[in-house]
Image (tube, rainbow over all chains, first blue to last red; front, side):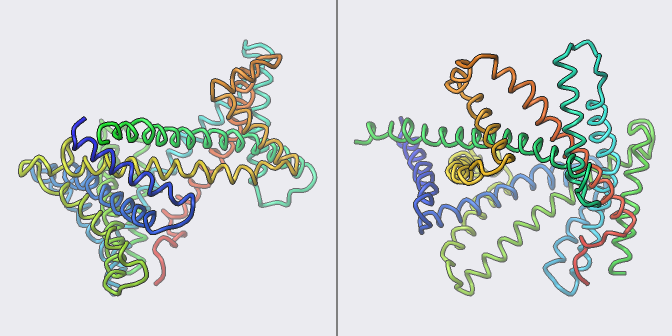
Length: 212
Length: 220
């Protein structure tokens, strides 16, 4: 193993342990690592946006492909920075309004056409579809679950009577789903923890024999 | 002027996107216009990210200049931002250390600092999620018990040892979990939430396009 590779591993190990040190309590080493991480993440975004958006989507098409009209979103983008001058900050609203308007226009159609209708279509299935009893039971569970979940989140009327009973069934379904998601999230985080511990035990400890 | 122009821009942009949905994007000009506007959206959206980074830099710089509490850490934040961003802005033709390719400063900082630190941050959450689980999973009500049982079964189901343990019991518990919990109750709730959220997003979008919803403009 080269000395550069060993140094790289030690740098990673230092920051890994620095961040884990927060498990004991907040301390200056953790704060240092945390601030460096925040700075690197912000810097990463700059590099990414500069290359994939400013250069590839704006500058190159405008200069080399003759798409001169792209100066409009370019100006809209620059207008965003007007927020830093209180007197002219209202100008940035134009750019923001463009983002909100376009996104809203996309949302109206895609949310209904791409999410609501397919979800409803997949929910309302024929019971005798050839899948047998198990498939029919599953189809009923899905319909009851979807309807009761929607009713639980319907707050325009007080949850009493039949509505209250349906909302209660909705809570049970939601708890089962949240439990499943919680389980998955725990597994994901533990998997990351295993990865970091593996790095410390195998990669970092592995350099000890090279150094000492 | 200060609100009229933004509302008009929002209305026109939104209307174009809605109308263009009903036209072929390759054979009609209206359809093509929506693709162009989506491209513009990516460009303006990119600038909003840069705006955020400039804002972080300003806030930290102000903290350092006024020697506020913990200013020394802010110095490291600023150094990190510039160390990562500046080399990536310079053309690769000047030096292999510039740009974003493998072997650049940007790539090195990402591979050896940013990515491992991000993984460690999320790994740290494993401990806090365990502590949260202790509080959430105390079976004090029927709902909490359902949460406890489902989460435990899913966690056991997802590790080989747990799956082997579940197989000790009569009946095919892993298959039952997959069919009735994940593809039954869980799927139903996800669909319910998706339908509700999508309907909410659509109605909010309509309010924005019509200029009824203006809170995104802030005060003034």
